[in-house]
Image (spheres, rainbow, N blue to C red):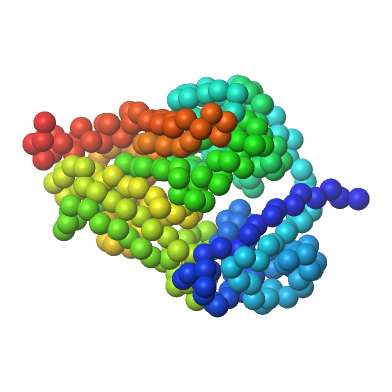
Length: 320
């Protein structure tokens, strides 16, 4: 008999407000919510009776769901990965008995998944400290994620209590995540807000895109401010109000100023600097300690390749 793991999700952000009557197809919403599962995989799980909505088994992928619905997905473990601790060096920004904050390098995957069974941040952390079990077999302690080629601060929970508390902070916007990124072009104003819903790309399922709420998109808000003008490039300070997959990368590309080096959402012009992925760095993370209640601020120093990029662009524009 195969074992299985369960995922519990409460539906939110379908409607424009909590009073909204808007609904959305179950398979569309889940494919946006669970980027590690393909839409066809989700549809098969529904048809096989592995998905319940408000404790009732759902066998129609076209089932409509609404804000407040509670969904449980039982995922049979086909070939369980043997998650092993690995002695991978870690740049620790903060650590105590409840949580640990790491400055993740670009190129490091956060947790094991298809194509990345080992060599991840989770493998490295398991070699260093105990992690909360509530995140699941493959994502122990993971509260939020960073893309493989985005560097910077990421918090991981050591206890189940810390995990729940930190996730609640992200949901209520009391935790703040701030990024630095270099984009193509010069923006017309000093600051602004991008408020465009994001969902799975309708054709390329490996990408995200700006998608209307009615077609499966979820509310996504990014605030930005110019930190430095560098000729035909700009250093931007981004602050996330929501945390959708690839949010900054999609929003930046949508307004015509994609992140430099982004292999998915920009043309990736050669600018003479060797980059691992995109020039996007999770610079500052602010949160409340789950136990003491004290405010914690972790600042992740810019990686060498990011600093090199800035130095090259400054020399080209005559900026000291």
